[in-house]
Image (cartoon, rainbow, N blue to C red; front, top):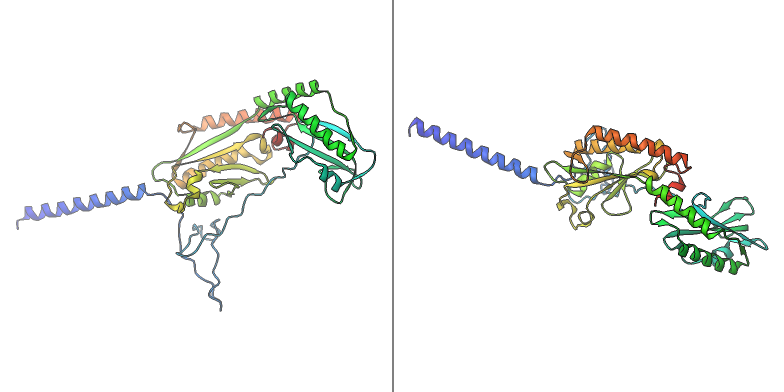
Length: 357
């Protein structure tokens, strides 16, 4: 065999090896990124059935992502804390009718007389009692005694302003409740309250902001577990719905940010075989106090996730978001916060959360 033939064989083998390596690289890039895995060993003890439970915060001292060996299961992440959603009547955003009582009534009697539905049309309806022991207004409780009552309905929310029909329904519902307890309601003027509802709805409509970033994969798609693990390292915890994670606040229990991905992928029989190419990161501005720095943390979370997951931050149309545009959005938000403060509807306050819901 001549030297030329040997050279051609060697060159052919090198080309074949290069092609195989390239194909392997392409296959690896097109495979969904999955949550990392590592071996978990049992602690040295007499009972070898005891196993060290894996955690998802990477706090093992070496910065290594926690993983599982075959047969182990991931323990559930802590769920998001729930904000107090009990209605507190406020003259700023509610129609309130005082109910005069002939005598003190028990909380048990009040609870028994409450209407089944706590809504009037699309607006929340609530009753409060003035506790004889604390002299404070509160949601009626069994075992307590109340010297006065009041019933209210919200003036506006994201479904619109309270209208004439809803106000009439509120009057009927309150009167029926009062009749059971022998109370006498005093209703405000309907026209004035409906006009006030429209004004409040107009203000809310022009000061409602819900921001959203899209995080899109550059090359390899992500599995739901990979997304969950990456977000968990930044403090996100599972939300109430599949495919949703939230970032709890530092000051308040209400979530600051929401991270959402395909629900069907999260509910798949084998989620790790699902491929995600985008997740959304959102902020409901009026629901989060300015002191929590929600927009700054949203930008930081988006940037860190993009770096860790090899993604790019875009708008809803897939256009990358420039830093200059993000800065302008932040400046506009400061003006929005000031306007809400000026109307006693500061972002993150109970009144703002109710109005913008």
